[in-house]
Amino acid sequence: MDEISESAVRAARDLRVVFSRLRRRIREIAQDADLSPSQESALTLVGKHGAATASALASAEGVRPQSMATTLAALEQHGLIRRAPDPDDGRRQLVTLTDSGRARVEGNRQVREEWLARAFQDRFDDAERETVLEALQLLERLSRP
Image (cartoon, rainbow, N blue to C red):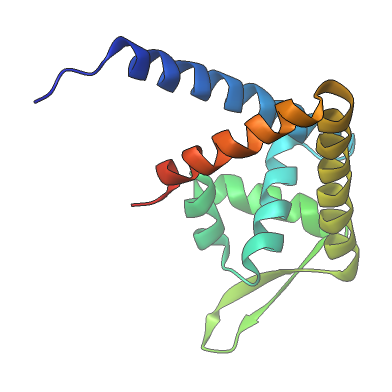
């Protein structure tokens, strides 16, 4: 097996650290005091993937089904999700966003995008933004199989 270069190790470490910090900062931007981070994450997941079972959501979030059930109960209490019988299997329930939940997910997404665009505008000049765009094109390769 080929040796991994020091620059590759450093790039991997630094990229992971920067992405983790940026992800945390973006999440903070639209955090609502009345929802926990796990509730916010589950709400976003339902918004992203549409109707899903609680077990599928638990698997996607990497949590126990009991933990997801507690999270979904809180979101339902806030009027952000609804549960309905699965038309293909009446024993299961599908979780979907309510109109209020959809508005909240979209509002949070918009707030995050505006914050990030404003941060790029305020903290970088045109040449630096072009450098970021070029780097993103290179990083896109990491997301491909």
